[in-house]
Image 1 (cartoon, rainbow, N blue to C red):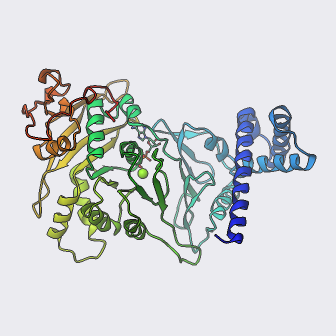
Image 2 (spheres, rainbow, N blue to C red):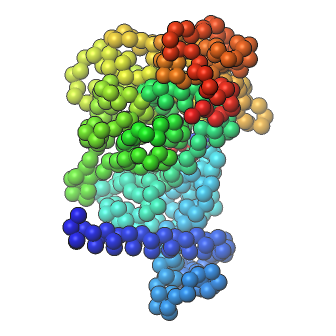
Image 3 (spheres, rainbow, N blue to C red):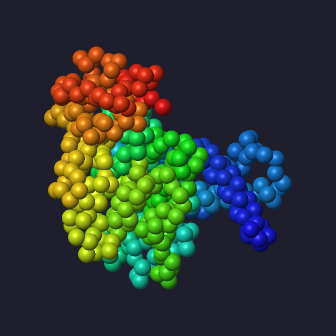
Length: 475
Ligand SMILES: Nc1ncnc2c1ncn2[C@@H]1O[C@H](COP(=O)(O)OP(=O)(O)O)[C@@H](O)[C@H]1O
Ligand SMILES: [Mg+2]
């Protein structure tokens, strides 16, 4: 690295540290002030009030600073607090997972999976446009009649989409998606998104290098689930993650994160997911994790899965496990075109081992609705075997969704693969483990075929932790 680059990097990291402290004091400020009072003041009055409060906080808790440094810091904190106006308190609230602005007077948020209107509004369209301008100029983009739709990011990384009239008939519309919070699988089990036997099975599948597709609708929790599954990739493997907007937060040390890039103002320089998948193949990955396939990258991903990068994980937008596998086929044709459908089927049958389909329920909960394994081979029509299904009961007066997870036995080719690498299969999935009485399996209701794996390498490995350790799959 040349001296010039090094200096630039030093400067950048200084800037970052600085930004961190501004963010800290801004948070403290937002915690201290009464937001309702603030909305009654004009912008100028607000600034005066906030500067005063920041001054107090700094005197009380801050480092000792020279007069000049102190006033610069105060100004920057207030700038940042006022920066996105009425959005700031919403952004500061960690329970808010999505913020939607439909014109200056309609602000909605999502909290705990439920949509609600908030009592906040912009002082007219001008102020909303100002806020939008601030957001998009931070990523060097602009919004105007010639580019009325823009994707941008907040400095904290959140994704923002902007669309303005004449395309939007509801005034300027702003949609901010917070980063999904990472939940370990144990937490998802606790929240009722899956049962512990299923958690153990999925962990075993990831460790056994199954290629797993997570499917679901928008906001069904695909990224969150992918993140939870990724925790089971052993720490000695090299993982490359590829996303449109880096949301995954892997726990392993050896992770390379790649992010695609939208075109610049001149419409140039775009780097697609597809380019990154191809590049990743030259980076000696053990596993490739793609945030979401939605286009031509699908064919590259399938090829990667078929050429020694098994154990890869990916999400796809679909309405069911069956829809997901067909959608992969359709998406794959967006690549080279003209690949015959049965050749694609061959690729998919070979590549995809299991599909985990997630659903979002009316009470805001997210659940594994179905897990299906791929049983078709070669160019056969797709055949999925469902091994888990969530059966919901009719919604009661409390509006909460309740139901049961029904398990079915794993097909032999799947169970065999898991046993083969010395992993355990929970009894709930119909495969009876050596050290466990068949009647104790939690999923016997679904009826196992009493399959006892035999043969070398297929027995429950001696010394493994008990299968029913709830939610904490054996390492
Ligand atoms: N199992 C879950 N239970 C409750 N909330 C969840 C669950 N999974 C995800 N969420 C929340 O739902 C929202 C959408 O999750 P995300 O993983 O981004 O969905 P997707 O990738 O399918 O669009 C986030 O706010 C996330 O925190
Ligand atoms: Mg996602």
